Length: 252
Ligand SMILES: [Fe+2]
Picture 1 (cartoon, rainbow, N blue to C red):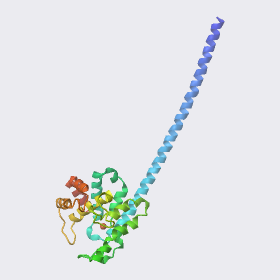
Picture 2: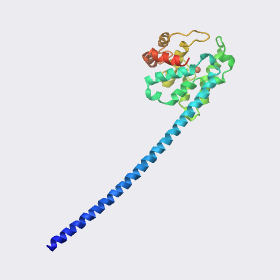
Picture 3: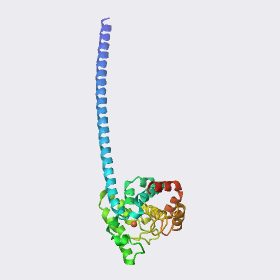
């Protein structure tokens, strides 16, 4: 009888001890949970602040690129919003060819800044109505290398600088400034040269009327393999007319 009472007593003590221990564990777990919630909330705040800083930085990059672009457009007014249009055509085509490349902001910056080197070309050559003399053409062609020099040391434009330098290279290697051929030419620059031609052909200039998008497509297709990358030209053929027409209508 006495033994049974001792056994029961010991059991109750053991149950109390376990209950107390469970309570301790429970409180500890609650503390840990609250601590984790605080960490998570701190992380969310840090992430939000970091995101805001990144957005701010990106916005200032875009504003800088716009300011540089305007410096060229202001001197080359007859092309209207050529730079914006060509950048929009270029992005549309890049998205189709390589979405990952299109997501790199430097590609758009390169498209927008392609002719930045023209700031160094005298007005008399830049606005000459007739054909350029050979030495004037040589000077005019320097805009690609000059543009590259202007932007290459800006850290957020180092890749864009490649488009600026190579936007007049030709697939067959007869372009400038480096006479690169085929896939030696950066893809973004190969895409750019196609959409630059598309915009030139479909925009009215003092020396030539605008042609239709269909006409421009077939003229560009005729130069696939000589001036242009055939794979890029094939992708241009896949872009629907309405996508190109919308870009043109929105940026007269
Ligand atoms: Fe150019």
